[in-house]
Length: 115
Image (tube, rainbow, N blue to C red; front, side, top):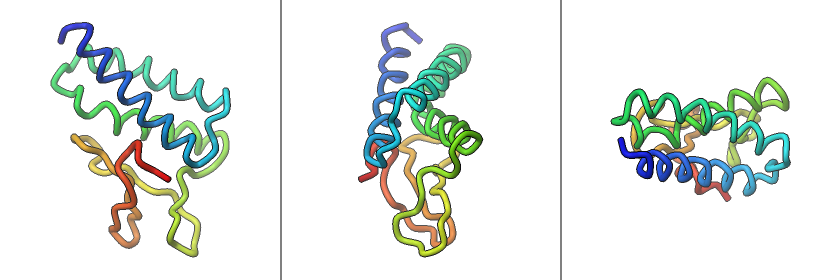
């Protein structure tokens, strides 16, 4: 994969995840550093598997979600359920990732489209 295509995929993933973090008002410097770490990790991954470039946004979202769980708790929380739970990224490894309320199977928003 040419370097410019790799960077476009990675910058797109970063932008989408940062938009979701900002929408839920958790995009402070510590969290942005988690995004940068996830993007750095996935840069190597996409360089090894160029066909996975279309999957990188969902993977970065999952990486950040996992890192936040360890530091701050579940994110992003489902906006429609009374019982607090985190939304899941689906597909776990596929194009066009979206946030899903797993208990109800409801698509909440595409990754990058939380409000």
